[in-house]
Image (tube, rainbow over all chains, first blue to last red; front, side):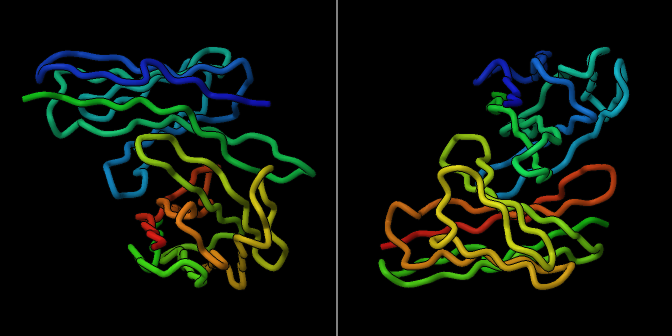
Length: 114
Length: 114
């Protein structure tokens, strides 16, 4: 069974600090996505990483896909209160009877204090 | 692009009634849609995979007679919670599979069963 473990589970930091969220698996993924979800809303796609070793930047957010495509990280520089939310990594995984399904990470809840 | 809508955004119903939730991909066609359930402060739990023109595939532990899924067109999937009970109260989120193995999520439907 493919699993995506995220760490830390919870993170509360002051505005301006840097942080890194990790998404780890023992399985290889063809791609990984990162989402951010705010309370009462659906997840919003931040980025998709496809190539092992790939690094993508989205303003203050830097995403990296591990060389072996088993892990990924999200680094936020100078966090702001607007970054508060639930961060989820996800990747395509095999299902039963050939059914294609998505696997979600355990989630990291970030709170940035002003 | 890649917008997914859900309707209704929230619903309150009496125990024993059935509730239908719609998921639409507004600007793209989706052969595959997914239905998730999310409990407070937790990650998304995949309930079922909905394939256009065929029966849905349910995850282990999800009652298919309780959660009826219909994917009648390439832009619409519906989830019907039959004979709803208070324990079915939750946040239900759908997603539609777009290009590059990426899922695009709807805004979610909050169900409260009294």
